[in-house]
Amino acid sequence: MERGMNKIVIVTRKTRLNELVMKYNTVEQAKFYIEHMGADFADYLAEDRQYQAVLQQVGDVAERFARVQRIERGFLPNMMFGERDIVIAVGQDGLVANVMKYLHGQPLIGVNPDAARWDGVLLAFEAGQLAEILPEVIAGRHRVREVTMAEAVTKDGQKMLAVNDLFIGCRTHASARYDLMWNGQRENQSSSGIIVSTGLGATGWFRSVMAQARRMAEIFSCGAIEEAPLAWDDNRLTFVVREPYPSRATQAGIVFGKIEEGDDFRIVSKMPADGVLFSDGIEDDLIAFHAGSEISVRVAERKGQLVAS
Image (cartoon, rainbow, N blue to C red; front, side):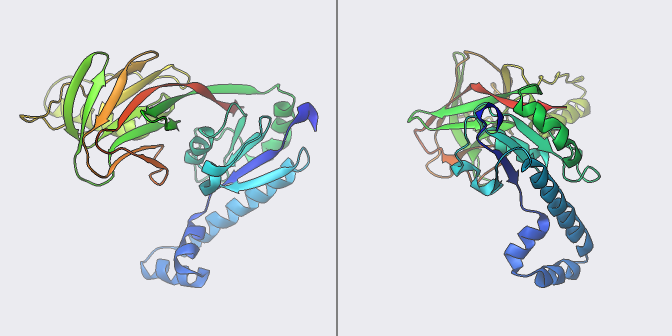
């Protein structure tokens, strides 16, 4: 193998059919449930067939160039990637984001398994293009889009990266209670939690929060809210406090802003239970954020390396 490459790692995801079979044990029982609910089971079968066919095609191409390892998304937190691995994520945009935060500079190729079904902002390639792009990546001649990530660090040294966004708050529908500190300002807050978004993540959860703010500003004749999106490689983050609640004991002045490199942005929990920190919507991979815990959020030194077309 050229350049001492370790291997090609293909990261997969469960299809909706896989998830149903895990829940109902067999395809027949899954079919009965879906059709009993009045839905079209044929669509689940078609999606799964398409995905499995693309996985086979991706694997066949990859094996021409290197040894191949396949891993399902759920095992990513325990995966040890080689320094010179090439990683191929076959799935939706969310899978690419999930994979990227576990890499340390390895090139990541996003493959769209079903272009008729998924737009694929992060999926620059289809399976038929791999035979052309893999030699370029192996030789180091490929184009790369750098992606800025957010990093949250607890006082006891735990770390979490985010490609799209971080969520700090309560895992239930109860209000999150905490102190928020940002560049010398400090507030005692009660809210539905804090979202810290990267430039890449600005089209996700953050976008929905801003859509609500824009519409409310229009309704109350407050004028247009203009917020230019950050570029994927912009070394800034944007934070927004969801549904802040002002009261005699809590404030709602620090609800939106940018976190620049070197800024001090910290949150201290006042929640005796159910406080959490998670990233990119993966609630199962969380850090507990209970009373007295402190989290600092900053721009990560590590950059995602997404192979571009």
